[in-house]
Amino acid sequence: MRTKSLKKNKINVVTLGCSKNVYDSEVLMGQLKANGKDVVHEEEGNIVVINTCGFINNAKEESVNTILEYVNKKQKGKVDKLYVTGCLSERYKPDLQKEIPDVDQYFGTTELPSLLKVLGSDYKHELIGERLTTTPKNYAFLKIAEGCDRPCSFCAIPIMRGKHRSTPIEDIVIEAEKLATNGVKELILIAQDLTYYGLDIYKKRNLAELLQALVKVEGIEWIRLHYAFPTGFPMDVLEVMKNEPKICNYIDIPLQHISDELLKSMRRGTTKDKTTKLLKEFRETVPDMTIRTTLIVGYPGETEEHFHELKEWVAAMRFERLGCFTYSHEENTHAYNLVDDVPEDVKQERANAIMELQSQISWELNQEKIGKTFKVVIDRKEGDYFIGRTEFDSPDVDNEVLIYTTKTYLKTGEFTFVKITDATDFDLYGEVINFEYV
Image (tube, rainbow, N blue to C red; front, side, top):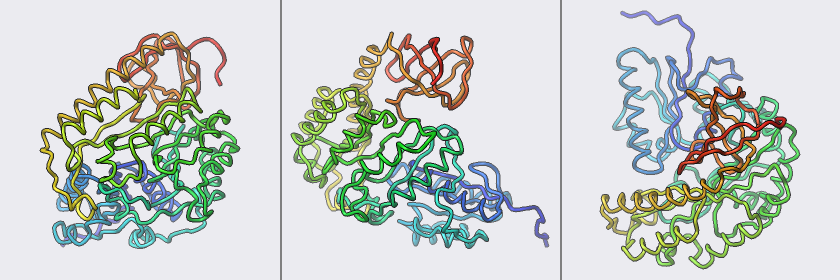
């Protein structure tokens, strides 16, 4: 009979999916550390917690494969305990318990106290803003709300995350101050829908007031907005963006499609004319704003005419940043009642066509940057380059600025001015110019 190991437990938190999951893992790790636990992120540990994603088919497949990978390690004795949390677990817990019983326990998205308990820890309510950040030290995600009240037909997020719940402004500010104390200079505000912020607790859309509170936090230099919704967009946010230098002239606003027929079926609450007018107002109010959007192709009933309309609109709008996804037929969503009638190969062809068009637009916009100077933050060193970003670029998804290491030395998290000397469709190349760092 094998005797139990006397080695100290080490908890390895594995994160899959979006920035909201990254944030949740960081909160979990902060709680564990406060309880005196030895916790690491995606390193070796004899106790493993997998924070899963259950959004679309590819994400679900990755989550299941990761669970099976660690089940295999457990069977080989490399892992002692295995726990699964997050969106996939919230959505499919009974199925997972039946199909993958070697996992010690499954937890949903709202069961952090229960997860902590099985890990020998107590949930500490007083730990506002205490997280172990896993991003580069100069930026951090800041979740301002949980859940979503939007009725989008294709989306399973309300099933997994519940109704919209805003975090009070004072708690968000405390968290921002703690992040700044730890060297964070850029806050990336995230939620399922930033523009809904405050409706539940302040009875009004209160994103602008939150931004005005956050710009007062010392040490924070950039504040970036992710995941806005086009219907009911609070226009006072644009005025804050225009007047406050700390608010990046950047917004991530997933638009999904532009055909009125499909927008109605998607239950987006808007039209082509309203959406186009909104984007025009964005650019008139904040002329140098970068707009990032995401689109869905292959939605049930999308014809060649619908797709052609979308493609022509993308060409006309010339988005600075754009991503395109193929439709995923998700159980228990409103669209699941529709026939998933666009073949997978056609979906992929349409996504490729949109991204090919966007690649050309991006190349043309980047060529216009050559010879211009931008404030750049340095995220990391990679090979022969320091890798940085302008205020118009979010980490991992947007352009990067590459600076040869042979010409200068830069520190991670440092802001400097860079003159762009060359550009491709999704990268900029530049050199530091000789005036003082910011």
